[in-house]
Length: 266
Image (tube, rainbow, N blue to C red; front, side):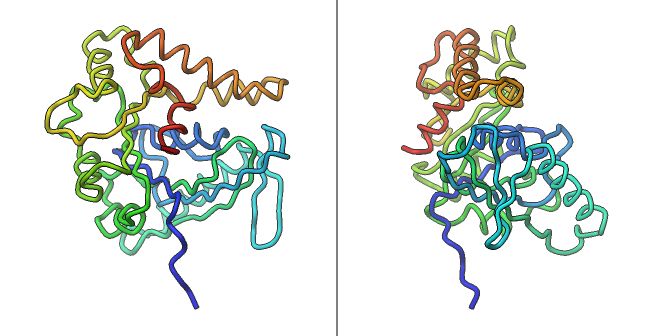
């Protein structure tokens, strides 16, 4: 008999089209497997069930299909997802319910989480029942992704309002400020980002933890090309260093992918 799968340790990304949700989840996975793009690459919910396997190389991804395991590359997985999403979009699925895509992956790089990549909440395909199906359970972690360039307008963020409706006390919501590298040199925006990281944002904001990341993981790309096994760790540390150089007044504990994993764990 079908039963609702466990929602424990689900992390659900909420945000507008182009906010950088898929890039943030790719950073968590440690591989660029999810399609990304400014115009809404994610047109249906994608659920990635991650199992941590320390025995694998940091460059390996194993796709589980039923009881079979198959090694795959990040690019082949990403292109396969892109094909599935574009076929779903062209088949007129907007008139009915958008079917989700489920993946089960084993890697040595990702935390043992189930990541849910929802389409941008400003798309027609996304409605309240879809959001509640994935984010409404009282043990799901909400990742509200806001691009750094929109930090000044964070008080009007629909994603934050949705998160507050679902998680009134803010105990399972994490604010993720993405694409901080794109705001470098914009003093006002950087000041707004630092205020959020120091919990000194607008008074009407929910009291949640904030973490800052750079854009689509340059870190991942450089790590995949490098020969060394610890290159991914090096790249994540380099990301944190870059953020420290841009956000000089922000706490180190809120900068970069490693900080995001720690915050989710808390």
